[in-house]
Length: 54
Image (cartoon, one colour):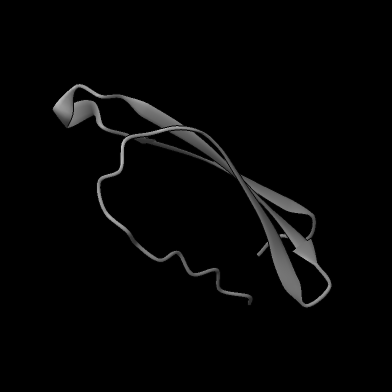
């Protein structure tokens, strides 16, 4: 659980020699979240990320 913001760095692509790094910033905004994603990456697959509010 976080009160202000959560910063995550996601690295991928090492196996196919196309390194990518994406920075994700999650900020709580009343009853929802604001999400900012920056960086560069190679598309591999789509997936969902769930944040559990404890």
